[in-house]
Image (cartoon, rainbow over all chains, first blue to last red; front, side, top):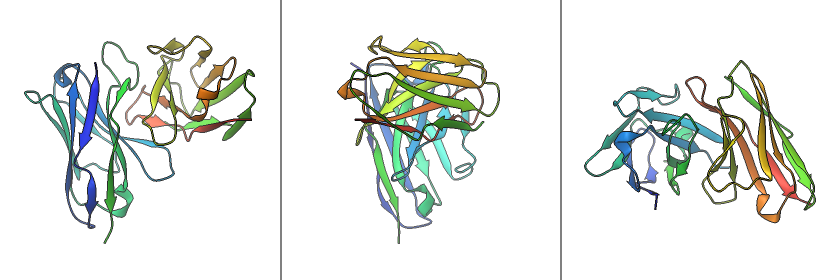
Length: 120
Length: 106
């Protein structure tokens, strides 16, 4: 059974840092595109970052230079290191497989989400 | 690429057809996915490549379109079909989502 379980959300002051983790079971993170998608309270979905199987990283302009996506293949876990946080980063953060796994198909598996709140 | 969804809200009686639209600001071929999100839940993939159903998605849900105009159709609305539906393009980085269509059960 495929499961993606996020941990690491919480409250940060502006300018602070948080690290999210997404533990995956049922497939290898190293064999797939893995992404982070966020959703600010009461709003729609925003793609944040992707890491390819070959470790290529791509970021949305809104987080470039502040967030870093990486993975630990031995732990089959995806991470998002978030630095210089601002109130605009307040959101539920989802990890998801995609947009490419066996084919280009969007995000076919999602975690339950981790809430990140940035406030003084 | 800007994805524009319409209508913002759709109120449909059970058993009726629901038609949701999504327009891309430039040619994305068939690189579009559709998701349903119920309150408090993660999105669920419904369709990809415009017209391919994801695993376990019932046949009453279908997708069509290409280039810039796309449609998601629910042929006979069921109670579990309520929620917000998002389209998303994966033709170019950054990936972008539409603003969503809220489907209400009348």
